[in-house]
Structures are given as structure tokens and as C-alpha cells.
Length: 321
Image (cartoon, rainbow, N blue to C red; front, top):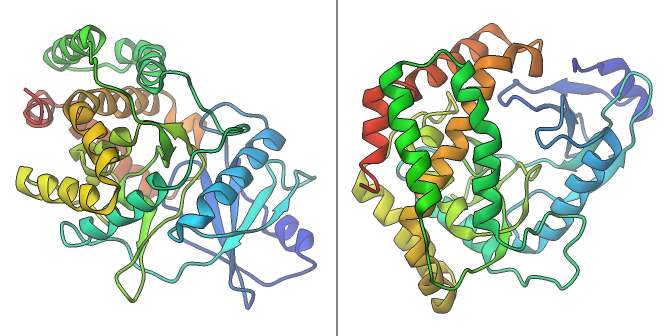
């Protein structure tokens, strides 16, 4: 849904606004000049919530994550209104640059650890908290998998994906399942690095209580590290290993030990989650996020084409096969 700057300015009592470059597919970001805050204006809800519920969910996510010290703080909620149909959130502005990979991966590991270390409250609503986060992720993959057949994929790519879908469904992990606050959409493009080298996680739209190994996979998979044009760097196996070691060093030893048996199987499952989302984007992207700049749209289409090449799939599968 295109952003209306006059409506946003009116909601902020005539504040001067400075639109920021559009990077993602679900939000516009606008600096409120002189106030040290940024307006996050949803274009659509990626999890299918209505405007009011979407704002309430994100507001709760920012509030829950704030004690980590690695996320912006919620300042104000602008409810939906004429010209601002999805409403907006005002959050503190983070002065920073996109991550440089691989050198900023340890800082990203620390930011994720700061979320994963937070106490899990008894009352978790309104944030999602599936009884079995792995089963819930697999169910999401299977729902989104219908787009594979609609995405005009190379038959060899589709065959490889079907093999991995079958393997993911056959996985039986008997280790205890750790559950923490997770960011979910933790690709490196959703982080900023400040002048001290500290990483800030800025997009909490999909935060929930789930399995931390999914966050770790999404932060370091090829499909994630190549997604944002300002980051776009593939990590080698040694660099991924160093990232995981930095995370383990930053969380309690019992959490690190509990996550370890899940790292490889959830790397596959998280890749399938991304791939099935990208299949949907390949089919419906123009409808889901109209008005994207041509350069960004071109980059995203290029990334989607790349991740579905058989040779790219083989490169990613080498992480766990």
C-alpha cells in the first residue's frame, strides 16, 4: 500500500519528514526530522494480520525485545486512519550502516544472543508461541510449498527441492527443544552497525517465541546473506562456523548445548522456509508490494532467480549433506 506522506505528517502534527530508501518489501521507513525517531509504515502484513492487529503485534514485539539493548525502542503507535490505512509505529532512530560480511557477523551473533538470553515470560501473547516451533515452521513451509509448482522452476531445481522437503518431513530430532524470544526475519540486511561496532536488529515484525537455531540459520544462509543489495556477501563454511561459535560464547552454556543438535536440520528447514517464501514472491511480488523502486525490484528478482538455480541449491545443500 503506497505511503501517504501528507497523512503521516498530519498524524504527527505537521512534522517534517524525510523518506528513507525503500529496502524491504513490507514497510516504508520515514525519518521524523529533529525528533530522533523513525516511522515504520506497513505496506502489508506478511503474516496476514489486519492493520490494528499488525500494529499491536509489532508494538508488543518491540517492547519485549527492548531489554536486549540491541533493538530500537517503541515510542508511539499511530493507529490506522484515512490516508494511513495500515497505521505506523514510531521507534527510536538507530544511526548505523549496513553490515559488512563476514567481519560484522560476530556483532550480529551478539545481537541475536541478547534476544535469546531474555527470560521467557509465562504470558507470551500477543506474540506467537507455537507449542512445537519446529513443527510450526514445517507447517508454514508446507503451506507455502504450493507456490513451487506455480513459480515456473527448472525441473532439476524442483526435483532437488522435493527431495529436501521429504527429508525435512522425515527428520526426527529427539533432543530437548530450547525456546526463546526469536527475531525470525534475521537476515543481515535487517541489522545496522553503529559507530562502536554494535549490531542492532531493526525489524521485529515476525518476532515470536521459537527455536533460536532458526534465527542462526536465517542470519547466515546464502539465501539470506545475499538478499539485501547493501550486504550481499556469501559466507564460507569457516565463516559460518565462527559465527555460530560467537553466538555460543554469548549465551548460557546450557542454551548453547541445547541448540547444537538442531543446527543442521533447522538449517535445512529455514532454507526451505525462505525458498518457499521466495517462490510466493516470484509469483505474487508485484501485487504484494506495489511501487517498489525499479533498482530494488530488479535486485530482488535477480536474487529469486539465483536461489532457484540447481547449482545454487546444490551449494546451499552442502551445508548439511
